[in-house]
Length: 349
Image (cartoon, rainbow, N blue to C red; front, side, top):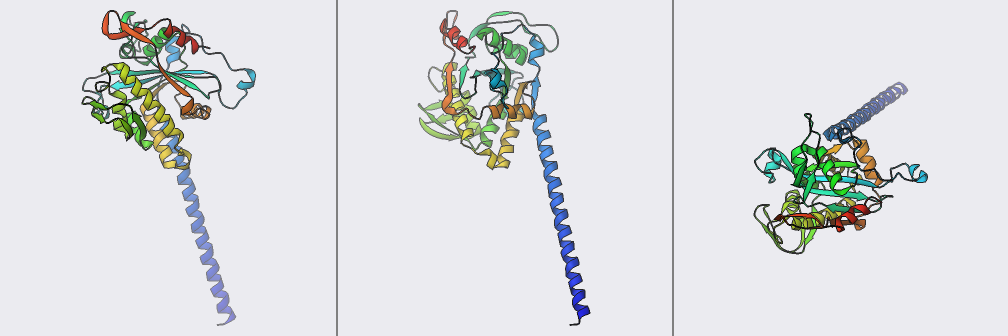
């Protein structure tokens, strides 16, 4: 082969290598653009999933005082660290195909069949979850309505009627009236969203202390350990006819068992190592919740989550508001005093 031919072959190899590098560079650039666009869409999608209600504007200043602000040294921390109270409602939705398939029923409207006040201690390394029985008779205060006007004060009304009558605003106002505790945030999660969240986490492990046989919630479990999917976990949260005396008080015990199990599942799942599952969980959470305007963005929810990274399931205490049978109705309860008052007072410190 002549020197000219060798030089020509070398030029061809250089051009081919250059073309290959350009193709590789263009491919990498396209992948980076696609990844950036996908991440941008994912953030936009998750952010727009979240529904919110402006509780603060609706209720104004006639509310319990907020928790004491953190000290100056705590305030300088990059993440919030003060005490926090969050009213969490499980919405027994009566409309929507997905909710009906999960036992929501055939009628329209919604009820807050699960109500918990989640108190997070200052420093955010311990928490107390207080369940309020839905059948508790309370004085429901007058509540502003989105359409204008206000609801009338109702005496001896079931606690969960507040949500039915006046939505999240009335639920928060009633909870604050009953407890004397300011609800810093509000979160509502619906039937279908709860089931999707459990499935996104890969299910949840619970151990029941008794057999559960409830045709209404379609749940049939023997006493012992179980791995539940989303539909089964939701049935466990709803069941009451197959345990104890069939009242809401027995169901609360199962709900608290489920809360602790979910916390353990979340803490034991390394979501950061599995971006696909992380997105699935985030999508399930954001699509199923309604919050106050202080938590209605992905950034705010992320900040809250990061501030709770030191909180483990072992440091979450679950209790029920002390109640006794209502004198007027054996199927209803009222707050047991002074025990209930002392419990709420402990959350205001």
